[in-house]
Length: 134
Image (cartoon, rainbow, N blue to C red):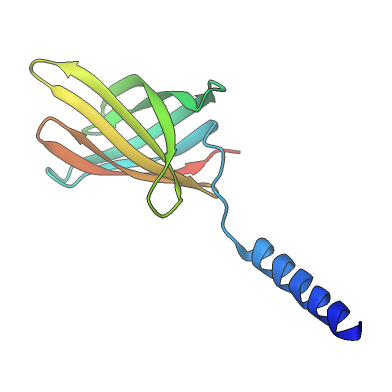
């Protein structure tokens, strides 16, 4: 009987310890601030995002920022949520930009207060690094 209580106590201790130290994915809905950086050209700039939950596993996102420090840009995209092969939550977007620009795609993960990912558009690829705005 005493051994059963010891085993139960040890199990509860392990569960409390692992659950309190595990990093959970954040709900990506909300406001974000950070930067984009092109690995192809070296260009970079500030970027903000406002992400809204659609309640069906997708999110509407509006990204705004600057290119070459002075040229503003804004675009809206639908983000799809899924889990990768390791079980980590991911966000994916794909949007056609027309015959000259090709298409835009993004993969990102929201973990804690960080939203990090990569993008590809036409002949460009790069990274996105953002933090949640409180």
